Length: 505
Image (tube, rainbow, N blue to C red; front, side, top):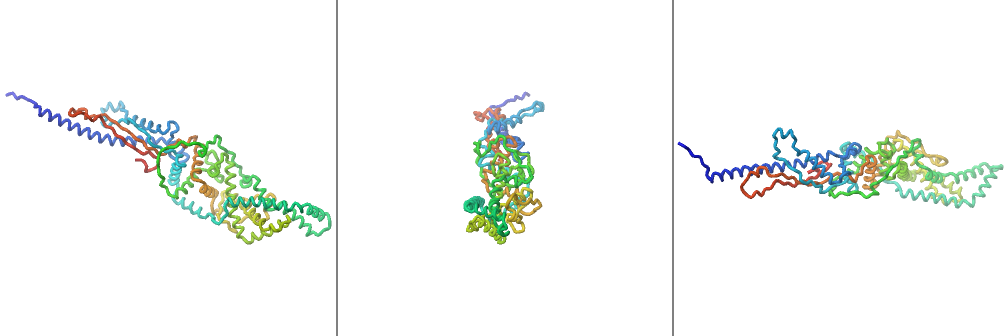
């Protein structure tokens, strides 16, 4: 008996529909896998880009930034596409193993929508990196120690501007004394010659000689002369002063910087200011410590003064420190009745020698100022020798005598064994805190640029990128039912690329 096989139209349609459903589910599953693959590829592209950080910045300054100097921000998109295309290529080995890339994607478009340079917002991205580096390299107790040290700062002091004004007034007072004494100098000179050549009373002879000495060399004139002399030779003693300078200064403060368009709100706290100061202490040298190989030996001094020569920066900072200490020392002298009385006696003698005894009180304050300046020279020497100073001057710490303020006196020798108080570096940190934040940050990046030979306004710290991935249909091509409206897979993905932990998404 012969059995005839046959396929009805209904069964054929049913089988076709079943195949379409199966391939439709397979394509849907593939689309889900393609989405996951797209997310994975964006992470691969971002991580590969971040791995190409500027090596010198990381080695010398613990800062991670991407160098956009060659191709700009758009180069970041091109570089990521190169990474993805390289990963996508099918090697001959894969073909021999008959591996078929069901989830293969093509990054048809990568665009950098927003980016941030290290110099944006007054250099805030660089400061954030520096703070992170300090937090990773130092214990939290370091901030407390620095904060405790700064809390010792004497509040009962005289402002630098006031001290400078008082020094000007002391100079004017000296001129006033000289002008008032012109009428009596000739007669006193004749009296002195007659007293020395005759049998006049010895006490009178000494009195005339003392008057002449007081006019010629007294604490006020000593201070004026010291102000005119080179102060670096005095405070540095036998140490050589660095002659380094920027060969091609191109300071960030004075040039037009490239700017990004990335919007970011800083979330750091007030302690970040102290962390940044600790970062500067770690990575930059000063006159009390060995050079760290930068363009300057006195790098922290440059951050304060901003001059293209090492010696000029040191001189500016030393003068600032002298004024700071002079204010503290002057306040101490005013409260020390013994030393204040000693100054009044000398002031009375000087004013009388110039024939103007009514000026004894202002002369007293000028002498106290000169005495405070002499003590300040000794203070700065101690700091530069590696010693420490309490912000508040005490009787036990006072080192100079009023009798020293004449002739060629240049202050007491330093005392590096002093182990209490603030160091020279910490005093520089106090000065840095008084400067504008963006100014200090830009000058810090000046030092980085000079050493690494780069431009910090071409270093990217954050960016936002958009990725378009596409793939042609695979299983859906075998579906013959319908109008075939599904032309392929397309996925738009956005990602933030950042060197800051926790910010990538």
